[in-house]
Length: 135
Figure 1 (cartoon, helix red, strand yellow):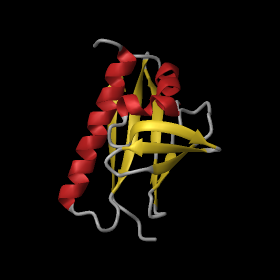
Figure 2 (tube, rainbow, N blue to C red):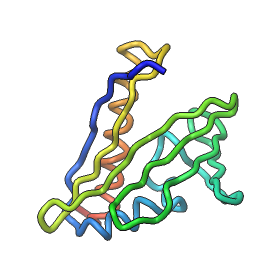
Figure 3 (tube, one colour):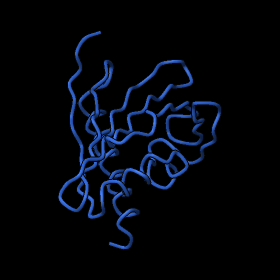
Figure 4 (tube, one colour):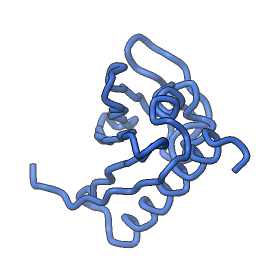
């Protein structure tokens, strides 16, 4: 597989990183902030079935709970193709840095990549608002 271009998309959150990690890594919380992925979610074994997003029904498998703030997840589309999504929460002083790595996949033009990046940023900002409270 050819190396893909990538962009790091991040937000700074004024809450302790472990609190951010606990909220962001809970699949049940996805419908609250991941508008590009989830409007409904249910568990099936080690995977989560996500319904209603713009990409249709998908299966999501998350990295195991860990002490490093890693929330990597693989999204498997209805056609069987998979997309790996690195997501990290890191300490940043008394707060946290939430970083999503967006890969530029084959077949996606520049306009599509920019639209995906904007959507990811919007979702991360929604998560920030939820975790910080009414800020």
